[in-house]
Every structure is written in structure tokens, then in C-alpha cells.
Length: 255
Ligand SMILES: *C/C=C(C)/C=C/C=C(C)/C=C/C1=C(C)CCCC1(C)C
Image 1 (cartoon, rainbow, N blue to C red):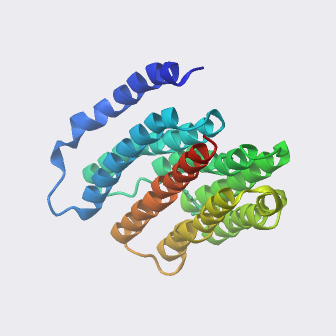
Image 2 (spheres, rainbow, N blue to C red; image 1 turned 45 degrees about the vertical axis):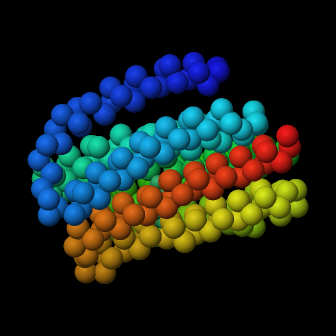
């Protein structure tokens, strides 16, 4: 499918999906900083989506999918942010279920990015893709069962940590890490390495939030939500910008 056609199908859906949220958003209080952070980040995610989709026009064919996936991550997150903001404004509750649904879609897409940038430079086995997907599912299902009260909080945390450790192993020392070390050009290797550190340090914010929020006596929900929101700026928007940067520079280098 051409990019133009993709736009034709996704743009109306994106607009329709945010309409109900726009209609209900009138009662954001001027001192509700968590609500304001939800609002700001929703807007940043919308802008990032438009940017990543439009920039697909500018890069070589083999980089287009990576940019489309970055745009899908920010699009899916933007829509969830509208709903999360409404839950927060209406009830002051933490919108856990929306967060996890968002993560369940966007985290596998972020993992696919590792596979795609390696695929743009060399042959990569499907095993990389599957191992990253399995690690993601274990991490998120463990976390959800613990956070939503279906499982002991500590056990859910431990299962989640095992999934994350498995992802880190794959991108540092597993097949993906080896391919990046042996085959990538300097620009791709440097993007890969930054992405990998985001998955290590940027992602660590979520288990820390879980730990302080549910295990170490319980943090207040305002801080927890602001922290998760800022983490998403780094892990979704900045992550996409790194991919955009390598895609543009590599496309220009090969002209
Ligand atoms: C855009 C959203 C992202 C990148 C979300 C990432 C979420 C995590 C890395 C969550 C990790 C967790 C653990 C490592 C332990 C258990 C609890 C979780 C699910 C918060």
C-alpha cells in the first residue's frame, strides 16, 4: 500500500477516535498539573505522529516502515492519552487499564523497531522478532496481573522483571546485539546503541514507578502519573526521533 493510501485510511480514523475526548475535555482545572501533563503530552504525541508520517516522504524506501511504525506508536499512545486524561480529570484515579492496553500495543511496536533497523541493513532471522515479542508479553502480563490485583504484587513484579531482562539480553548480547556489533554502519550502530540505552534507562522508570507505587509503602498517584507521562515522552517520542534521524541521514548519504 502506498503512503498516500495509508493516510487516506488512517487519518479519518485518527480524527474520529479523538473526537469524544475533545468534547469532554472542558473541565481541566488550572491547578491540576497531572491533568495538564496528560494534555500536553497528548498534543506532543499528535504532532509527533503527523511529523513521522509526513517524513516518510523524505527517506529511502527501506527506511519508510521504521518511520511508519514510529508514527503508529505515537498515534496509539495519543488516543490512549485522551482517554487517560479524561479518567484522571473525572475521577482522580490512575488509569491503569488504559496504560496497559497502550503498552500492550506500543511496546511490541517499539521492539519491532530494533528488528526493522537491522533488517534495513542486513538479513535478520525472524527469531529476533519473536524473542523480543515474547519478552514483552511476559513483562506486561506479569506487571498487569500484579498491578490489577490478580496476582501477588511482588510475584507480578518479578515475572515482569524477567521479561524485561530477557529483552535486554537479546538486544545487548543476543543475536540482535551481535548483528548490530558486526554488520551495522557507524550511523546505524550509534542509533541502535542509543535505542538500547533508552530501553535500559528510560524503561527502568516504569518498574521503579511500580516498585514505589505498590511495594515500598506506596507513592502518591500524582507523582506516579507525572513520572509515567514524562517517561513516555522519552520512550515514545525521543525514541522515534532517533530512528527518524538515522533514516534521514542514511538516505541522504546514499544519494
Ligand atoms: C511507551 C510505553 C513503554 C515503553 C512502556 C514500557 C513499560 C515497561 C518497561 C514496564 C515494565 C515493568 C517491569 C519491568 C516490571 C513489572 C512492572 C512493569 C510492567 C511496570
